[in-house]
Length: 105
Image 1 (cartoon, rainbow, N blue to C red):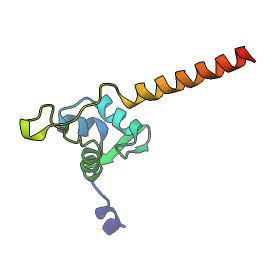
Image 2: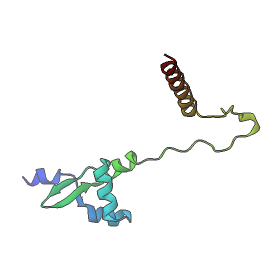
Image 3: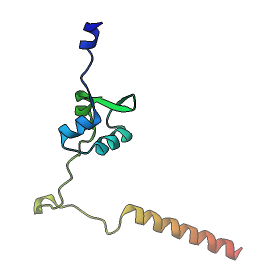
Image 4: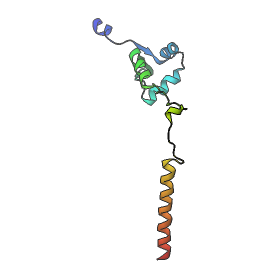
């Protein structure tokens, strides 16, 4: 029995984990609710492991944004309107044509 207990991962409370990370406990609860942090509840107390916290950081990783500006060599052709605006304009034109046909018949 003692050998089995020693092989268990190191469980810590969310409050302890929050103190170690310099965050509020509610922040970790929010990550738990989003599905980013695996927790275990026993006796109304939430526990997690160091590995679960490391995994949470990987899940919360932010990808770098593309460059906002370009040099002269990296010219980008930009459209004057977005594709969603163009699609909306085409749908509106189609609807107006259908309405005209219904009025004339």
